[in-house]
Structure formats: structure tokens, C-alpha cells
Image (cartoon, rainbow, N blue to C red; front, side, top):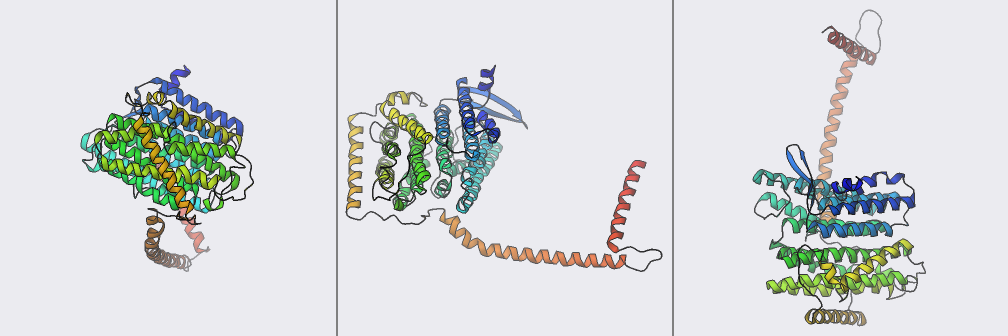
Length: 567
């Protein structure tokens, strides 16, 4: 009976239901409840492929639970990430991160199984509303402002999605969430909605603005779901769209320059996240079975190793109180396990052989080669070198080595170490046993990443990148770590929009104030006239004007009631 109920619920729904009463549950019991909810949600995946829950609402057929070969790998890794986040945040006694994190993960998992655009919209907006509390929980003024900007952008994405769905329905009579082409206004709106969450160029400022302002646990949770949900949506709706190849190439290239000069290590990782999304977007744009497998594999591996890197920097922030590169260094002495796990994440994102990034990224590079897309191949090759530079070397070097920051701190809490250790084991396991990993991908493939050309080519790239970093550091050419905030496209709404909008706001407020004052004048004049009439000489006893008005109103009400009763 219980198993039938679980398999009939959309995956993720149980997690959202369990998140509601978490505030009433004691600390350690809360973590157990969360793990049980995640396990129950994961069990619902055993229902297998097909349409499992359809309902009729307002004349529309809504598919709440659709599962297939594309949703499965994303669902698996989303559940893994949710469980790792529970262990990572075990030390946190406040319920905010746990309630928001569990409901956010549940909404993202439910969105994966939406079979129509209206259901997708509902969960799409649910991810925005639940995740914003992970930023607000920091409690700082910067976090509150970043949270509001984040929420505006995310809600705007949902509005575009709903508007696009409405237009698509008027054109085709269908709300099915399936493959689309950029041939109408509706599909363009849906494409842009997906692009906002995927952090397309010029639409990416929210990511670097908001993620680093979240709590220690919140940043790790945020890195796992929103952007990868957008990757899934693009793979479902726009696979083979050539424009995505150009967009993806831009995404891989431009964040590298910002990451090099950024001082905040979590912000460096946010830029790196944007860079890695570009690889997935390029693969979706290619659209072949090998490329889609590469996009899914890269998303799967990326959630684990990027989460691991955010976990390591979160542990540093938790113990040291800062993740500014200019203020860190020498932490290998006091946080050796965190250092080891950080290096595993760094080697994974850099695609070292025997680590997860290599097994995933090889699929994308091979798909580019088979299609003869030389220019895109070279852009991604250069971006791979940049990834090693800013995430593979910069993160562990400035945090744990480099100059000694003089910090004498404890190792990370045990729960953090458990989560980082499990993520590290997954990174090594995926990279060492790629054949098992490839079995969960959408399409069956016979592919071996460990041939001579792949291994030698990747090792040459890595070695020359390491030499370039060493040269820049040794001869003082590496950009200094400055205590500053680097703005990219968020400059448009954090600086330009504010400067341009302030005079407009002042003008609107001036007009509004004049309007209110005028209304107040008319109100006072009317009131004075009424009071003069009320104080006019009349025979018999007199009462104050306001009392007369009250008595008149009471009389009108009594007469109205009498009239209704008589009727």
C-alpha cells in the first residue's frame, strides 16, 4: 500500500510535504526526517518510464509525473545532491536552511517530471520562491538586496515561461513539454525563460550576484539545482538548436576573465559554474545522441564536483570567517582533510584522467569532433585550460597554500567531512569506472574515454596550463587579489538601472505627493462644509457635528435592515 502511494506521487512531492513541519522537529531528528523524505522520493523513481499521474484541470490535461530516459539521470543526481546537502548541513541548528533546501530540491525534482508546460511553470516558480530563503538566511543587508534581485529575475523567468506556454497553446492547441523549434514568439519566450535560469550571456548576472551571498549551506544547495534544471529543460525542449552552440561557446569563454581577477573564492566558483554550463549548452545545441549523453553526463558530474568545491570553500568560510583569496593561505596545516577533498574537486573540474570531469567532458569534445565543428572545439579547448587555471589551481592554491594567512582553526565539522568525502568518492568512482556511469545516460553508447588520443591530449593541455600559471605567479604577471567586488552583466541593473531610475522615481514620487496633497485638501474642504452644516442653528437639543454624522449612518443602516426584513 505504502509503495503504491509513493510510486504514484511525483518524485520530489514527498520532500516538499516533509519540509513543512520541519521547524517543529528537534535538530538531529530533523536531519533523519529529511533523509527519509529523500529516500521516499527516490523510491518513487522505481515506477519506471511512462505517464504515471495525469489530471484534468480547467479543461487542460496536466501531466504531473512523466518519467523517461532523459529525466532519470537528472533525478538520480538531484536526489544524491539533496542527501549530501543534508549531511553537509548537519551542524546547522537553525531550521531555515533545512526547510528551504529540502523544499527547493523537491520542487526541482518535481519539475524534472512535468509532462506539460503549466506543471513545469508551477514547479519552476516553486524553485524560485523556496531557494530565495537560502540567500535571505544570511541576514546581511547585501544578502537581502541580492535575494530581492535574484527573486525578481527568477520570477521573470517564470512569467516568460507561462506567457510563452499560453501563446504556444493558442498556436498549436498543445501544452505538452516536448521538442520545440524557434519559429514563433511563444517558443522564443520559453527559450529565453530557460536561458535566464541557465545563465545565458547577459542573463547571468543573478548567479554571481546571489550565490556567494547565501549561507554556507545555502550556496552549496543553490549550486546543485536551478541551472541544471534549466539544462534539462533545454535538452528536453531545444535539443539540436544551432544557436545554442554559439551561446554555449560564449558562456565557456567570458567567465574565465572575471574568475581570474575575482577575490572572493565562492564568486570565482560561481563564474566557473557559468563556464561549465557552457559546455552543456554546446552539447545540447549539437543535438546528437552522443552530444546529449555528454550534456547529461557533464551535468551529473558537475553537480557532484562543483558541489564539492563549494563545500570546501564553505568549510573554510565556516571556520575562518572569510573566503577572500587575499586573506587566506596556509590552511593545509589546520584543515588537511578539507584540502584533500578540495583538490579532488579541483582535479575533477579540470578533467584529469581518472576523475569524473574527464569521463563527462570527453563525450562533448568527441561529439564536436564528429560533427566537424572546429571553431567550437577550439573555444572549448581554450576554456578547458581556463577552468584548470581558475578552479583547478587558483581555488586550492590561494585557500590552502600560497602565503600563510596565519589562521589557526579547527578542521571542518564531521558532517561537512562526510559530505565532502562521499562527493570525492563519487568523483573518483565516475572517472575510474566510466562504463558503469554511462549506463544511466539517455542513449546506449559504446564509448571508451581512455584511449591514447584522449588521455595524451588532455594531459598535454593540463601540463601546459599548470606551467602557464607557474610562470605568471613566478614572474609577478598574475593579477593581484584585490579587495573589491567584480561586476559583470549585473552592472546593468545594480548601477545603470539605479542611476537612470532614481530621477524617474523622484519625479513619480513628486507627482504622487502632489496628488495626495490635493486629495487631502479636497477632503478637508468637504469635511469642513459638513461640519458647518452640522453646527447650523436648529431647534431642540444639539450635538457635535461628528456625532450627527455617526447617528445618521446608524439610522441609514437600521432603515436598510428594516427594508430587507420587510421584503
